[in-house]
Amino acid sequence: MGKARLIARPIVRAHTRHRLASSRRSAAFVLLGRALISIYLKRALAFTGVEIRSPETILSELRDFQQKRSRLIVAFRHPYGDEPQLMFHVFENMLPRLARKAGKPLSAPPALRFVHDYAVALWGDAFIRFLLPRAGALPVYHVKCETNSLSNIRAVLRDGASPLGLAPEGQISYHSETLPRIELGAVRMGFWCASDLERADRAEEVRILPISVHYQYDKRDFGRVAAHVCRLETLCGLACGAKKIDGSLATLLPRLIVIEQHLLAIAEAFYAQTYGFRLPDEIPDESEPERRQRRWIALLPAALRVAEQMLGIDPGAEDLVQRMYRVRLEGWGRVYPEESLDALSPLEQALADRRAGEGWFAMRHMELVDLMSYHDVAYVEGSSESAPRDDRIVEHVLNLADLASRLMGGNITNRPNDIRKRAVIVPGDCVNLTARMPDYRMQPKQAARAATDALANNLKRCIERYQNETKG
View: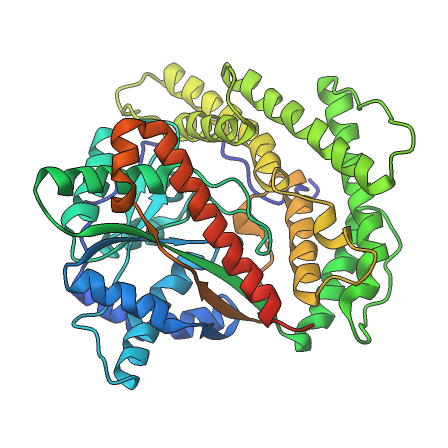
């Protein structure tokens, strides 16, 4: 028997759902985490350093929180996947150190209580399930109202000893210098808290602190970037180009365009031959990049529709991301059903295994959409006046490598993470939700949307500041 060509081993057996322990920060575990996190960031995640720009912006908000002048949500961008680990190090180690150095120490380490998608505990291993509750992380469902989880988050935000930390885009968004849709969750939680404080006659303000996260990739690893490009060419059946980079990574752009064209054509052919997908009609005078973007936009709903049909989901009028969340919920629900499997007969267990296998294969379509729904051809090809920065090109290479692995059955855990990088943390201006409470009492939906738009604008300003301050 030949070697399996799928990059991930299919799940074809149902398992009783893992139950997370109650979320409660373990002092011993957190102390150990503080001691080990810098080594982990360096050895496992290839970080060479972390820079916080304008740390006093964050420290000022933390002092207000600790002095009971505010309740705080830290809304950090999530473009790469490693941000929670990075934020743990920033808040547990770096910020207290910087505060002491400035002669104004914090009264306690400003730990964050992270909000995470429940699915992390399902696709993660046993260590992840052990780690999350002991680090104080709080699970939440994207498209399922789970009262206990929401109540826990609301209680922590209202009365907890630590600020709440979450990704405002809801999940990994794969591009650091553009802002995707921002979900309403952070603002809704904040308004709940402001309402609770108002009823209790408490004077704390509820604020959301936006933080942008960027990676600067190490030029010493540009040979590895070229190796990833060569591997992609081989996977696509193309001749492998040069493995050595002289100067800027912009010399890779023509090869990357060809690779993306082949990956798109392969994906279209797969869905056309297997599921009857029809390519969009050509538009006269349309440029090749514009047509490529339009082809991706046409392919993604079709891929998600395959998953929905496999799982019996009615997409309704929801947008692509919400539909993707529902596929993820149903798919993992089949792999890890809520009900116990112990009382099932052998025949029923076999059928449960079939359901699990169908759920896993349906989620392969969702994984493609998860990555490519954020894709923008113009991210690296949009300007003819100047070449994109090397960091953007590395992002693009890693996204194409991720795309290839997802077409081969993989997911985020198969994403390459071998290019050394330096993280840059850029805080922005807070959104004060307490000041918006009069509008919220009058028109809650409109007020939530306006506050979310304000958060998005503040995050965009963080990105613009980073771009203006970063050369090359």
